Image (tube, rainbow, N blue to C red; front, side, top):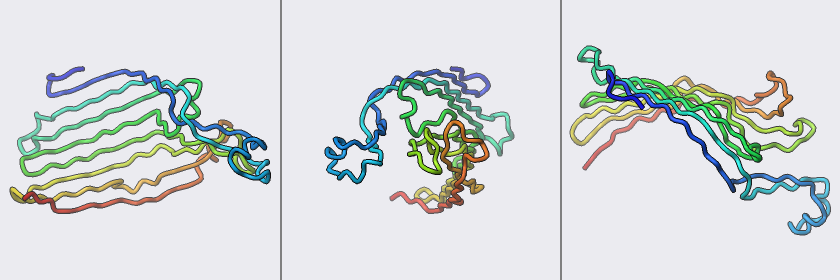
Length: 215
């Protein structure tokens, strides 16, 4: 950890997490005994029974880096400007790592903020790496060992707050300023890269503006 040097704050940290008894998924062919226990007829013998239960072991190890710098050398009108950034890189391992859904190995955000007695604003860029979700049952169009994934996404957010008086302030928040889409797909380890992402979700940009009062 480094701080107090030319208005810079910098930290590097490492971590390791040993996780047990999280939700994992079991997938077994439907047997007469399993169907009887579930109260289902033999019509489902050609199906698979998928259950979730507590169990499994996995280890997450990684490193975090954070940086903040107050730009006090700027002219008086620009005082209160700060740049920031943090990055996290993680590795997932263990006998049940494939049952650990929602894992992202790379995350980060960076940007700048500006603060004055009656006004503050913040611009941030948020990056999320590839995120693996749950396993997908094989079929005529889905290969065995496939999982659903979200592609890496970079979003830009903007927020501001203006104090109009001692009691009232105007605030605004813009999420996903550029309207970056979310890409999703299902693939197995041998799926070619051009066939991985087949769904685009356009959520657009979300604007929020309001007046806050204190009484």
